[in-house]
Length: 149
Image (tube, rainbow, N blue to C red; front, side, top):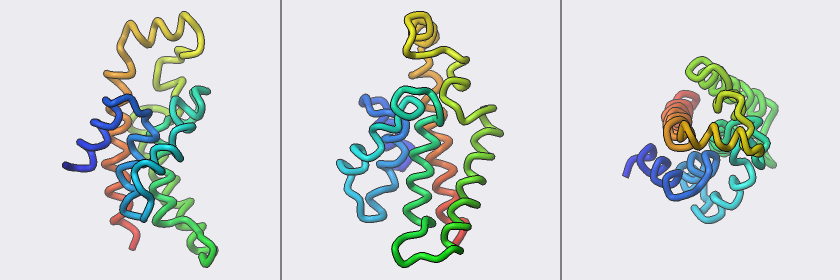
């Protein structure tokens, strides 16, 4: 199963965008699927349903951090590379979708209000939009994991 297919299946099975993206990559770095789902869980719906950074973005950044982040024995060059790769991801995501903010991606509908939740449901945004964010994030992470050796 491809990483995109797995991420989309994860999302379709009730996991959030962050979980769906991060859990695809985490096992390649020694983090099992269950742990990756739990770690990324609070980042969904724009970080704890606050509709800030899209979960697909946060899941992607976690995955990129596993490869490029500065660990205990890392260097400042690792930190610089992690920021550069992350900024590239965000720039590309924003170019594709106009924003990286969950609220903006859902037409400024606040999912915590009755009116906003109804608008999101009426347009079926979680089914028609969010999978596009997940798919793009997985494609871009795959690209970036191989771009900076």
